[in-house]
Length: 306
Ligand SMILES: [Ca+2]
Ligand SMILES: [Ca+2]
Ligand SMILES: [Ca+2]
Ligand SMILES: [Ca+2]
Image 1 (cartoon, protein in one colour):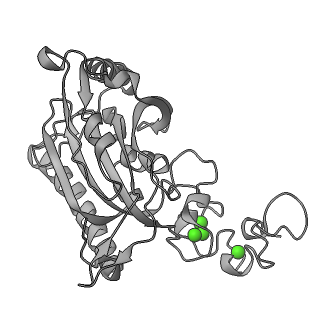
Image 2 (cartoon, helix red, strand yellow; image 1 turned 90 degrees about the vertical axis):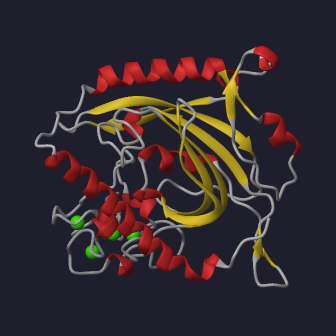
Image 3 (cartoon, helix red, strand yellow; image 1 turned 60 degrees about the vertical axis):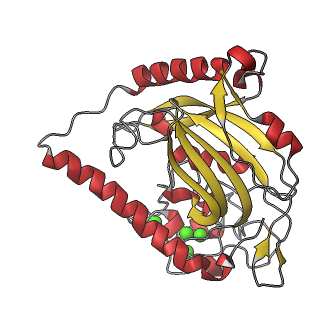
């Protein structure tokens, strides 16, 4: 597989994508306002049960092209396809026998947490390490609805900020490993070998829930994403040397932690405890890989005012 040298323009692409996602969200709100009402979202517990029933029925009755993945070379991109177990495909292995369940917390409008179940399907093992939910990832992917309609697909790699896409997409990232270091071809393009691939089947609460997406994804749609991961960068959104994934202090999957209560969440705050010493100058001064704690009170210096 041959790829254009998109790595060089990574920062621009990331910036552009951030804007695009933001605009898409705004548009969906405006559409609702123009219709003159905003329907209150459905109860999370009810919708969770409905979505999980739909997902389980789907996983019991469908299979994926696992033979294509088994036969593919380690540098060959396989298009993820799903079909019904029936007729000549009656003896295929159902997805339900191949997925692993994960549980993720979702906050409703009142700030109450609800556990939601998603299903991870390993497609092929990558040779590298896996990113976190907060990193920048270089991927190809296919997004589908349970009726097998493909609402989005990329066969040339693109950079995404995992935090800027739907929660279930980010949640898949720790389950997919990157490729070996790319080789540069004679014509200046890159080749990746040994990339990992995995899919997630998620309830609507990990997708767009009650918002519609440009009439392509109806409200309350469970979603499927199959992703191939080529490489990633560990994100540090505020450049304070604390990787973004470590600035979710309570590890609830929401980057809303705000130690100094100044309205700027930690992952965007260059002085997390507001003691006028930049986090970068008190996080890990001795470079031993663990946060410094000068007074030994169990609170690391960068989060400790005294
Ligand atoms: Ca940071
Ligand atoms: Ca803050
Ligand atoms: Ca910070
Ligand atoms: Ca500080």
